[in-house]
Amino acid sequence: MKDILIELTEHKTLDKQTAKTALLGIAEGKLNHCQLASFLTVFMMRNITVDELDGFREAMLELCIRVNIEEYDAVDLCGTGGDGRDTFNISTLASFLVAGTGQNVAKHGNNAVSSTCGSSNVLQELGYEFASNQEQLKQNLDQAGICFFHAPLFHPAMKNIAPVRKELGLKTFFNMLGPMVNPSFPQKQLVGVFNMELARLYGYIYQQSGKEFAIVHSVDGYDEVSLTGPFRVITPLGDNMYTPEEIGLSKASPEAIRGGVDVPASARIFLDILKGKGTKEQNEVVIANAGFALYACNMEDGIESAIEKARESLFSGKALNSFNNLINGKTTVTVNG
Image 1 (cartoon, rainbow, N blue to C red):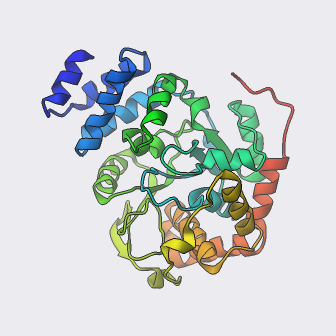
Image 2: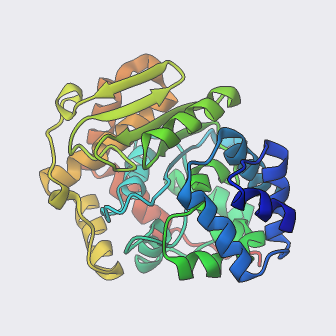
């Protein structure tokens, strides 16, 4: 591991296998906190390569606790985070809109690292009890059309890394990895990324994977379809630029999609939107992201149809019903770990 650190400090990049070996070594505790902080900092100072990102991804998937829910054909909606915009929990809300349409969702998420409130924070605040038991997760899908993977339960080998990430309080390459390491290995995904360079890296890796996917990035820096301006969408069909108006929605201001000042405030925004009490801007940005997730699952129907399905899910109460079923559909299944 020391040799790898030396290579990195000499401005060298890692091949895929070396990157994988490095992350496996970190998970085994082969670096102390100072060395780990140095390792993470390297990738804050320069762009990560395709080989490095893919090697780290393979290591994380090898180390995770796998969940087999293939029969549900679920989609994941997950952003990298790290865009510094502190929006409300857009992708998590969009997940319930998608579930409300009948498309199963396997949402991967975590506590906030560089923002006020992550997906795990808001769901826990609203009464969701994290689970790692496969049968309980399947019951969530049966009852609500959605299950939630709280990342620390499925990536226990990362316990050596979590304290350093928290102390740094900055985006690291683990933000880049989050959407890539869902423990159910979904074949359908909406991925939000914080810059175009990362969007291209994701696009290259996902094109090789055979997944159905949409990778989104707003050109003004959001890791989602923010509707604050033009945005890019990379799918197996190509790379396209859209404006909010082109998909039948209105441009939003950054202030209109900002999150709460703390977790309870974020939870109130979350519930207001699900209950139909959100502002037009809040509603439309959630509809847009849910729409592109549905589009990733079925591109033949087109984005306009996907947007309308997402809109109907929100305003008919189907999304709220999915949320209520997830929160209230508790079982007596014992949670592992």
